[in-house]
Length: 564
Image 1 (cartoon, rainbow, N blue to C red):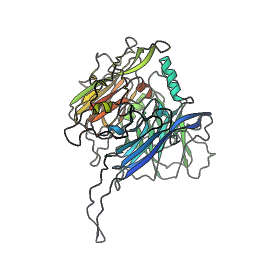
Image 2: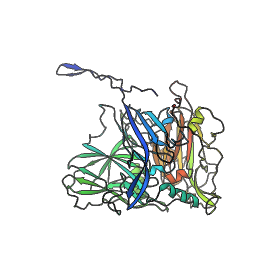
Image 3: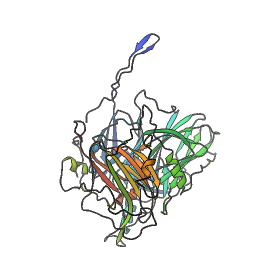
Image 4: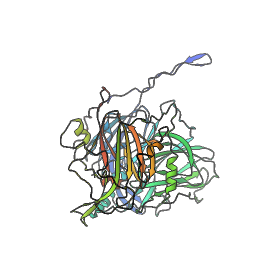
């Protein structure tokens, strides 16, 4: 892919002391990274184990870039597992080859081999993240992406004095892949994580964690920019700082109308940027993360902590804990999400599609299918429109680009086969889902506008589901509890300044409506970002057709694309 010179505008003449100055065009930079996939022994919670890492780091290295840059990341796999890495939230215009989900846009990088992810950062700035996108390896293979605005472009909020990345995660004492295998043998969920973490560390509320507590030193009277990422596999999380409010200014690398809150809610896959003013009595304050779950489902509800420490305060001072919302605080979750609004300013408009070309309605369900190899003869599964997605053995983007026959079909239904009362009492009979021999995809016309209603159901149980769409941002135009009403609910849609993001939580026993313009040709994955549900088949892919113009078609595949 050729380098693009994004910055071509010339700043008008400025007259200072009668002397005229003119700026020269700023060329996009090329940022290069080397990611070595390697195993390293790590100890947490009094347990040592080998984990898969990037460059021996846990979490992995931060990728820094500026809007308009070209980024080349060479991934060399020294581990025993096949590997692919997803650059979560980067749109990868026409360039799905760099998106990363295994067997969707590429075959994985095999042991002893390399692949260079080559992409441009176009029209995006803010906090995103990267993670493994094969098996459950993102339990330890993840890191932040920080995209700075174009040179000379200020934030649309007060310039902070300093910034920190806070990546929320999960930790298992046992080998995660073995834990998953044991769960699959039983046809049941694997055991839950043993701890939550902040920047890979669980904090002092856990045993053997004196050395495994993350701390940031701050000065009184300053403003700090916290880039918060939820990399947990299966848990939505509350996050708060004792004694300090936070001002939300960005979600999923899109600026928001600022609002102040005592806590945030962040689902797996999402990012949230906040400003914190250190105007309290100097001391040590816990930053804490704990699960949100408002359905009757077991979950790791342990609290991870890090420390916000004012300069000059000794470590002997005991930190105070924040008051996090209760585990099942539905009202906080709904209220918090309702406050999220796009900035929708002159420089950062919210281009919400007002006319809809294609309407989709997808039901989210759990199910039970026969499993001859499972210990009890059945296995839990998940579906969209009662279809459990079947993973292919070759890359779907490659099959689409080269017009390979027999790999997938494009008959994924726009609506569920049988409408029912989706959120009534739990349904525990007739829970078998449809599984075809090939993946069923949905074909979308280039540049068409799409409205997708994601409807939770009470098949086995209702639950909140964070859905991530690759290759796009979308606008969250509406959400509600209960069944979506196509006659009444669209009148309540926010078509002026809805939040724009790449991952959205569908509320427990409720629905979410999103809109986007399908202007990025390729094969793009959409899936629940709870790893358990993704592995059970709660996913689909969209085939977005090429457009008529010369720059509206999928780019040719790179020469080093991994073979299957």
